[in-house]
Length: 165
Length: 346
Image (tube, rainbow over the protein chains, first blue to last red):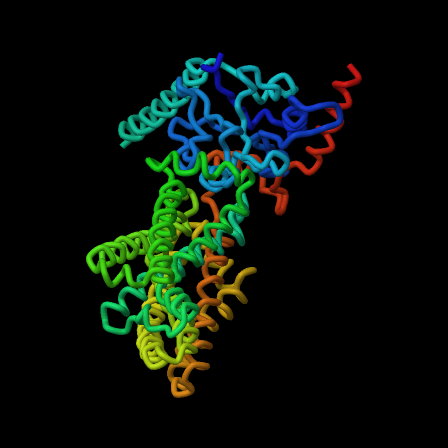
């Protein structure tokens, strides 16, 4: 199950914030909230970017963590924070390029997206379908297709302009 | 995306870096002065209390670093776990490496201080061991001064902390702050009649060394600012915050004015005034060193992530960006509460 990743299509996001609400309400009691693990940034009048942990292959948060509380899963598909080992130094927050991990003042530790152990609650909460949870292989295929299409268009453009000359 | 400074490391971390550096700089400066023939004779006090005081004035650097480390402990959310878990990831984490370097410096330095204060005869009887301890303390102190700059440099997505000139600047300010602390310590030691002449000579020599260090610090500060101004958007944003943004009073008044210009003026104009001028110059040097670290932490901005740039390009293609429309959704907290209520209802 942990071989799955979140795919975010920011063009489909309408900024409703339901993913944030679902994440904040996950695993806590009635009427309570927890620090959200996903944010929605408004980057223009009608453009939004849901931001959550990218579970990087070489996570700068894990490299900077002094206690190894922040680390990649043994199979390398998730980056998690062990709150039993975290000392709350906030180095992971400073080290992450997206400042994704955040400090939970209540627990005195850093927290971050752990993909809800394979069933992220933000996915069913996202009505426009901007957030999907897919197998890692499935996620990389569209990226490779896009890259090939881009390279192809560049090549065709160059070839065509050469023939015109 | 607007480039905003980080907010996770602030006052406690600035104080940790400052006091860590000053304590280590004090140890290095005291050893250098001792090698140059200006050391305080630790057995010269007529009473045990005087011996303790002279020992602290000569070797008190590790205590200052320990106070700085204590401030880091206060910054931690789960500080009681520090002793069990910190330092585990020394292979990649500079904070963990710092834990070991500072722990070593504090432990060895305080042991040496305790011997000087409570068993000074042992130092005379074991000259080789005493010298070995001194070399160990100076090596660990030098490592501590460098570490304070390297910790920030290890945060690779904050461009303003990447230049080597900043690391060198932190080393220079740690040494100048440590030398200033040594001047204040010499002023305290001079109250003991038996060493007042030696303490005055030490303070005079340390004051001269501090002037050289301040000039080096000024050159490095200018080089660092030039690097920021020639850098990309996030470095330029940090430079703007320092030079004419929210941090301009702290930078121009406290760092440049009080920390660099005033001590040089005191040295030129009022050096003949003796202890008051020396102590005054030392205090303003320390004020400048602390404010510099606070300012550098406060203006450290992250580079714009590529994902957000992509989103902005898309937005630009579909129409002009709305000014001031960037930011997190304001009603997310209220929605979360509503979501919990809905879930409870179903």
